[in-house]
Length: 396
Image 1 (cartoon, rainbow, N blue to C red):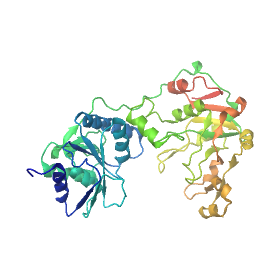
Image 2 (cartoon, helix red, strand yellow):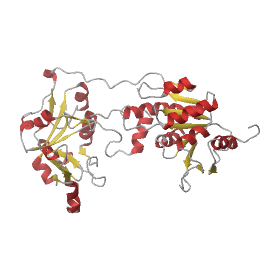
Image 3 (tube, helix red, strand yellow):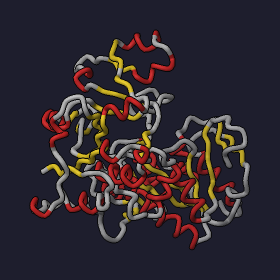
Image 4 (tube, rainbow, N blue to C red):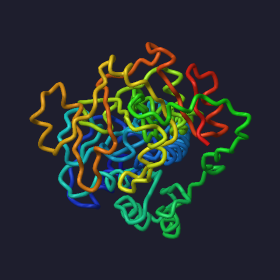
């Protein structure tokens, strides 16, 4: 299209997909500077996937800043919240694209009148595409292949991953540019066993008492910590903060010890009812009966956590769960609904003997004699709990 303006060329690409109208709300589409489209398949909640994503994303934004380019991203796409945050951090112009959406003045470009996905619009319109994460068999893979075969140039870059579900190798065979980063992701270093004679030991009798202690086990965290905003989490991963990917059960316990508090969250209850959960089972029994639950993708209990004397928590308003059938919750007094737990069908949740607090627990307000910390023996655990103000029971 000799003599055509940049936006005419870009819109012509879209029109090749079908009848369309384009509303521009910024000058980015008209700019002679390159536009780099960012796209990705669904990302899930795995922090290590997020970290790898951000390594490629940051590299792309740095390249854009060097080339004085803008980035384009589809509103509502998997990559949008990460790209928006990264563009702000790296001070790169952002072009937000909507397809057949009446979104007021939010998007820079609104495309109407054609039956095409938002991912296809960004992939087709952009001068270059950086595909951050592409899974096999998805729409993003299909749209990228269409672009590669149509344009027959070196304008499509695909991040390469060792994941078995990664589609990069097939796209590279079709003509995409393989995008590699130096180094490789390492699995978290395994915990090394310590000589038990060198470890401090807390009292262990409490672990076998029934009803005297309420136990809160920590677990690995996917996504933001309780009390951490989504933006704070994304910033930590984007900037590759050393602690961004340390979100295992020992890390959760370390946060509790350092903050002297248990923060209520809404993981197991209705979103409007954040709670702190405990079990009144003896600690030793919890460890003996722990099992992996495939439908949740995790262990029901981890050998890390904190125990608090039952009498102390009762004074703080902590109460036992009320078990029943799903329809029973609506009949309860609104102030007690945070305590409701369905009995369950495939598993009887009454065996958990759960208690809940509808507020966070200020551990600093408790007597030191009313708190116990427990952790599986490891080098990391010993380092993480160094200086713990409460007795630590080490689990071999």
